[in-house]
Image (cartoon, rainbow, N blue to C red; front, side, top):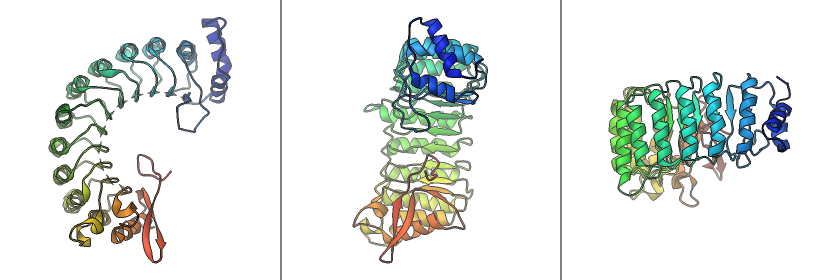
Amino acid sequence: MSARLGDAFAAIKSELHPGSTTDKAIIDLLNRQSGATTLVLRGKGSLIPALPPCQLTDEDIPALCALLTKATSFTEIDLSYNRISDAGCVALQKYLEMTKRIAVLDLRMNDFGVAGIKKLAEGLKVNTSLQTLVLRGCKIGDRGGLSVAEVLQSNTTLKSLDVSDCDLEIASLIALRTVLMQNNTLEELVLDRPIVKGSTVDDVATHMAALIQHNKGLRRLSLRKQGIKDFGATRIAEALAVNTTLLSIDMGANKIGRDGAAALAEMLLLNNVLGELVLDGNTIEDEGCLALATSIVTATTKSLSSIAVAKNNVMGCVGHRTGNVEMSGLVAIARAIAATPSITTFRVWGNPAVSAVGALDYQACKEIGLLASDPARPMHCDVKPYVVDGQVLLAEVDVDDMGRAL
């Protein structure tokens, strides 16, 4: 195998498609990654600046797959943000059936639909190496989601699956729930932003609760942008109360209010394993924060290590009708975190109490600022303190999914 992968790719493509041309950016990228274990060929829509973007099309995929059968160093492949459609998935199917090395395949934001995912599904049914599959943003629809569920009936090597923003509807969500009540090898499932309409919102939440209650394999579950309201949050909280394996749940960007937060707070008193609870982008307000804070402090088992309540319309003492600082939700959260050494990550930015102009809860800013800057207890958080005229204020810090500063 030539050390210059790009040149080898161009030769294979020319042989498969006489007279065709090869994007120089693809050749250069392949040449730069010769001998690496991760192959990155992100398309032009990617905002990740790791490498210059290229643009793969269906004509490139057979040559790329032929190259990968000979380039034995790669275990991870990133083909996200390209223009791979149903035709390109034919070659990917054959590659998945043959390879015994690739552990990670990222196909997010490509152009294939139902026919394409069916081809990939056929390959995955016999593949025994792939552990992580990312399909985020690929519009496979409900029928495509059913194909993915069918894969999970027999595939026992896949550990992580991302089917967020794939236009899944309730039929495929039910199919995934049904399969995962038996499949206990999948450890991470990202189900963000399905197409959920009207009365089906509560139905979807009920099915997700059943999944949580009966599945024994998942460690991380993301249910962002599912329209979950207090009813759904309560059903999910009831399921979490008896679940003994899930370590992280993300219910951000939903419609959970104070009652839903209260139900989740009660769950924290019963669940002994949950380490991460993400609720940012809801409307739990001060009352919801107070309920969570009380449970964090009084829980017998301190398993929680990460709590996210950013952008939840928490007004603090300024907005609370009593004006009593003890009723400030973020002050309560700060004190609960201070009293719970197991918590090392928190997110609070976007609440009026700490980020609004002219309506700040200075006590909340002070206590959160102390937490964020304590050298004796390093924290991952989305704020940092600064002082103006003797008052501690907070500034936003860009963080990754784990709360680590970027």
